[in-house]
Image 1 (cartoon, rainbow, N blue to C red):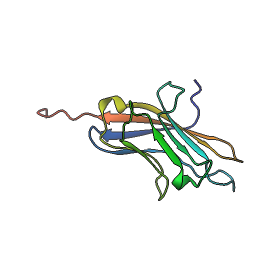
Image 2 (image 1 turned 60 degrees about the vertical axis):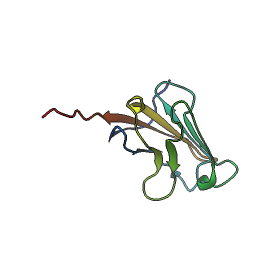
Image 3 (image 1 turned 180 degrees about the vertical axis):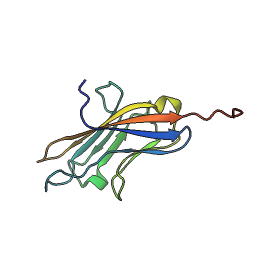
Length: 125
């Protein structure tokens, strides 16, 4: 599996929320993205998709892998920060994610995000 794109490290606490950044801005004057795919680890199967081939990206069809994400994931496309918002973080959420952004008439963009889960140890000084 090719590991393309820059690597960003994100840290968050178990049980909290985190945004896995993914820049969906076209590199040219091309139209907005038509497809956003998130992968976890070495898998070639997406765990989250945002399909805007038939609509604007804010109204695109969204799908999340029930086994990995359940209803804990939402792609944020408006505002300054864009990416996959994960809520109620679990220990097995830790690892490397990949975001692929496809455009109709512009090069595909790839990003890698390393999610580091912080586990608090109560009772230790």
